[in-house]
Structures are given as structure tokens and as C-alpha cells.
Image (cartoon, rainbow, N blue to C red; front, side):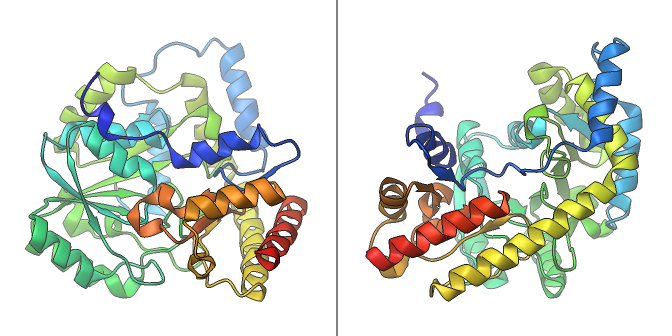
Length: 377
């Protein structure tokens, strides 16, 4: 077995999601799967592509027209990449793995926040890199001092950012941009910024990729799983300065050849015609966020108000259990599945992740049961 495989573990998110099937009647708040249907025009475009025989290979980088639409879409956020600087991938996951494989040599160090989406740490380990965690503020926002401390101690040259953040819903604040830029330049960092939730930002959106002077140092990752509720259709992308693209293309080309053709046609129409659907979905998530946050506060949970994505990350430290013990007992006693914070790294211990991309009825019932549970314990 490849020794790097022995360094990683199966996803803690999936571990708890899979438990639900073994508990009849359980409510799952585990996965980041929007409960909205794929927009009608996206579905129609994929069906049309299938019926018209558009099931052959696209170019390795993906459909030109889709890359042009992504370029226009990103420009609306103040992010500038042309079609030659965009590569369509098999979900954001393949984008991440392609970037890690292209950049990171064995033993090289990568700065990763904690808590964070587990694919970051495990993806880096899988390609032979070394993870250097940096701490966040108590509200899970970026702390420049903690980050600089980690850089000085480790000498790492790669930095991973992710805003809005899974599992906490934190965002990058405008006041942090200049200090972050100065840090990147001072320590000659290459930045990987995963912004799969960029369309689901409830406050003003800011990204390090908006700073044109850093373009040579930033690799931007996005995708369509969340924006068009098409997680199973596996479509993402990464953006990189065109002078670097050939090296990234080598990995992507030999790994998957190209992303699924009919999914690409669907996303193309989605960007052109379905952004109102996205705004409606975002407004519903915002309403659900406020409901879940209010219920948790009423139960006296210590919890921060998420500013993006569709997750909330309450503290469970006062219950004197590990996050895994708490979530196991909650599932056993009340048939409600949440994800233990430990699934998101050392910084996640003492918390649990609740995904609020579920129906109002499921959320209300689950929170009623969580309230019963904490009263009993």
C-alpha cells in the first residue's frame, strides 16, 4: 500500500452520514447537499446535450463557452481570469487534488486552517506534503498574527484559504485583505483559495483573488455543486495564471481527460439563465440560518452567526464529552445525526457541525430533539 494512504483516514463527515442508514427514522443534518432541485434550465440543457449526442470528450480544459461564462461570472465578483486561465474539473475535489499534485513535492509544508474541510489536510498528505495548521480567532475568522506565527515556525511556502468556510460559515473581512496581501508578499507564499461557497455569502464578499497584483501567486478553486445544487453531477474548476496552466493541465489530463460533457452544457446554461434561482436559494438559506442560530442561542449554546455557506458550528465543550461522543449519543438517544467537530481537524474538537440545507420541517424537528437531548444530559 502506498505509505501516503496510511497517513489519512476516511471522512468523518461520511462516517456519520453513513450511520443514518442504520438508524430507522433518523434525521440527518450531516451532508452539504442543498435540498433544492437542479434549476429547470440546467436539467433541460443536459437532456438536450444527451439527445444531441454531445457525449464525446471535450477539450481537456473544458468547453470554451463554459470557460468564457465562468470568466464573466467571476468578473462580477471583481476576479479576473480569462478563458485560457480556467480548467473545468470533475468537481471541486478534483480541482483541489490536481492543484496539490501539481504544486507540492514530498515533504513540502502547507499552511491549513483548523478547523477546516478535511479534504485539505488529507489531500496534502496523500501527495506527500506536510500539514502545518494555523489557528483562527474565536469566531473562526482569520487571525493574521496566528498565521504569521505559523509561517515563521514552519517556513511553509503554500497557504490554503477557504471563504466562506466549511464548517464554520466564516468569511474573509475587508479589513483583513491588505494585511493578508502584505503577509503573502513578505513571505513569498503561493495561495490556494477554495471558494466553492462564494455564491452563498450573506455579508459583503471579499477574496484574495480580487487583488490583481497577487494573480501570479493565487490559484482559485470554484464549482457548481452548491450554486446549482448539482453535487452528484461533479463539476468544478480552477483558475491559474496562464503561464502556469500547462503544468496543471498535465495532471488534470492524465487523471480524468476532461469533465463530464453533459454537466458542462448544463452549467453553461445555468450561468447564463439561472442566477435568479441561486439568489432565491441563498435567501432561503439565510432565513434558515437565522432560525437555526436563534434556536441554538435559546438553548444556551455558545455559537457564532455564520456569514456564508450553510453550516453552523456550535460549541459543545460544556457537556464534558468529546465531539464524537456527543454526536454518537445524540444519534443513539434522539436519532439526530450531526458531524463531530473532530472531523474537521484539531481545531474542531469541542464543536459539532449542523448543516441547515435541509427542509424547514426537518430542521424544526431535529432542533426540538436536540433541545430534549441537552435537557436530559
